Length: 74
Image (cartoon, rainbow, N blue to C red; front, side, top):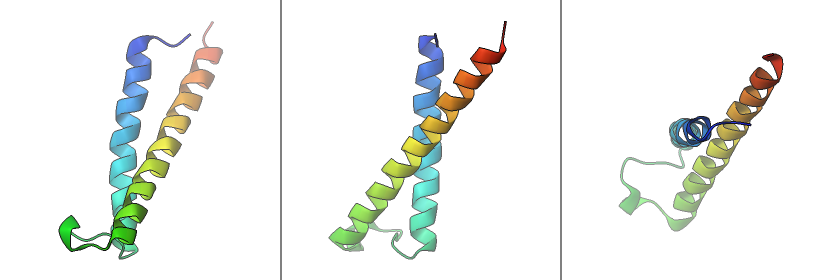
């Protein structure tokens, strides 16, 4: 069973990594600009979706790694 600190670390690092990756992907795809006020509503929603999906992927990957790592320990 994962400790509370491990779960909170997975959530925090997943959100951090997912936010950076999602915004970077949006910026490279020319859907993200430096000023959110000048963005269209559709582009804002795409950026938010990218951040949410990337965060979920990073959290799932870290949770899987923790599960595998814990199972390997005696």
